[in-house]
Image (tube, rainbow, N blue to C red; front, side, top):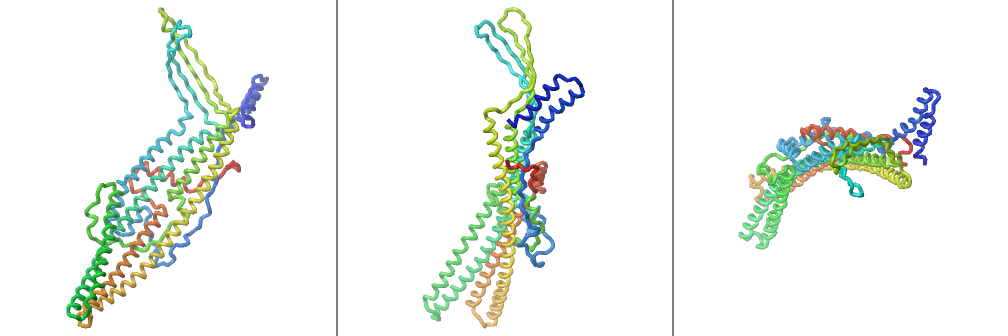
Length: 510
């Protein structure tokens, strides 16, 4: 009954105002009658603020100035830190031709069109109808034409809830587009780095295979000269077979990376030029300028969680509005003519207009339960938003730590490689002076190439860690896609995801 109080107050005030003695008092009473309805019409569903406190700086960011120089990559073009023009071109092509990104753009256009008409259910509706009724005694037949107009008022928060629902779909679609852009750029860079890494591994393993073959040749000569046992060639022969078998892994990785790049670029087959030689991508040390709070603006999963909160608030607003009477103004006009009369007759018409009030009575308890249920869902969505933010911060911290550890590993492997390379060079000099043989030279070259393999793996892992970091940071190249309105929608969604709206009432979750 408390939900019907505004209407009851309005009814009593209108009854008292129907017999006024003073015109000014009648106006005052009429305004008092409309005041409860106006207050009820302004009902709004507040959104709880579940933004967790975020650190001002990253805990695992490199503190060494040599490891983190002042110049940081542009988040909209972070892959340019590899200084590889071929990679730059591949990323641009993938962003323009990728099918997942194209699907996300189409969904964003769909959501934008629906958002533009979010308030249409509350606009006046006009319907025309015709019918051909017959009298029950079959004595006459009529042709009836009518016009019906209904205008529902978006009172009790219904209008705001409809707009929020459409806005949540738009924000979610924009976040999906941003997620597609981030994934396309990251996966393209990852597969290109893997391709170049596999090609380098194949080259180094082929060098090891050649050195193993030289060891077998030398040992075979020693055995033929009876300077070594005949079975002494079996170990070098097995080592050569293992070196030849090791070549299969990088060759298969090359094929897999090429096929993955073709799919990312929306092509049926890889480009033969991808196998062309060239310097492998070299990653320079770079600083990280973004603070943890920037994740609220850039991470698409956080934007999607915020859209889910907005969607839950819209559902709660509609459930609350359903507890109150639905108010509308309707008009109906109808004309009829007797089509069975054999003489000219005049067309009869009638019209009616007035308010339409749909009052919940016996199912009000169910509607109230639905509102409480939607309130619990809003609370759950807000908690899910909080968890998403914390998980994003944790993922970025882990990515920062992984990048730093890979940098240290690469430095150590580089020192080991340089030491073994100098040793192999000195062995070459000793051989030229007649102080060493081919077997010792081949062994030193194998050690050098194995160290080069470790260094190559460390460089590749550091590059992959760098890619994972900028993916965790939510760095998207949306401004380079030429999307026009799609980019504007994504930007609006990111701004909306900066932080949840603050609760404006204590009963936000009731």
